[in-house]
Amino acid sequence: MKGPLAWRWHGGKLKPINFVQAVELDDLIDIDRQKAALVQNTLQFVEGKPANHVLLTGARGTGKSSIVKALLNHFASQGLRLVEVPVHDLIDLPDIVAPLRGKKERFVLYVDDFSVSANDSALTALKTALDGGIEDPPDNVLIYATSNRRHLMPETKKDNLEYHWMDDELHPGESTEEKISLSERFGLWLSFHSFNQEQYLNLVRLHLRKLGINSIDEEGEKLALRWALNRASRSGRVANQFARDWAGRQ
Image (cartoon, rainbow, N blue to C red; front, side):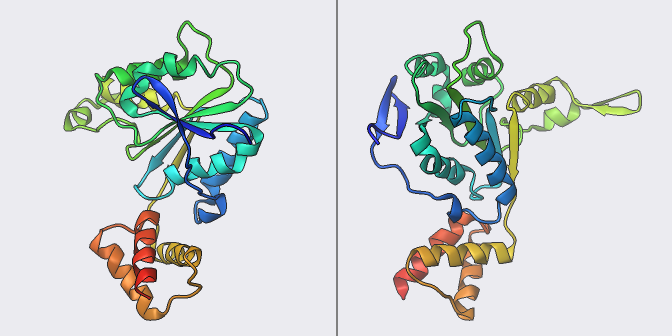
């Protein structure tokens, strides 16, 4: 396979990423529903069929970013390529997309940890890309964005005060409507939830196996749970951190 599989937009240029993180779909457990939906959408995309822009939202460390990287490894042989775009460089979207148009490869623009204020110019650029401006969008480019925020922008106390009753129904105010309208521009919207205790321990076991350790005793599990408690998070990221620490001590 010739050429890089991924690029990063930096300093007004597409720069190749020569060492792509090797994440496999089988490494991602307890998110089967989200994985199946995203694999199907991406399969349609690489086959040249209609597919949707994707928004992945939810708790931190639950696999949102990892699944996008895993898709690249899974579909690279079918022509999928990844372009990492920092949030505030979204204003450069026309320049980013221009050299990709017409190529035989299929490009996912990967926007990680999206969160902007309501008056950010990046917000306008993303809306234009998703909903279409004057320029016809290329059919070989999609946007996959991740965010810890459900509506991509901070929720404020003022937003709640704007809710009002109309004909016995509760309606959001203009600020909330604006935030919801951005989320709705993504055709596929997948939510990721925090892991429970058993799911977290399953992730610990998975990461340990990848490090060459096939089992963990009861005392090790207690340490894993204490590790998560100290970080106030039972996420895949925390499970991986514990596994590396525990494996290194053995």
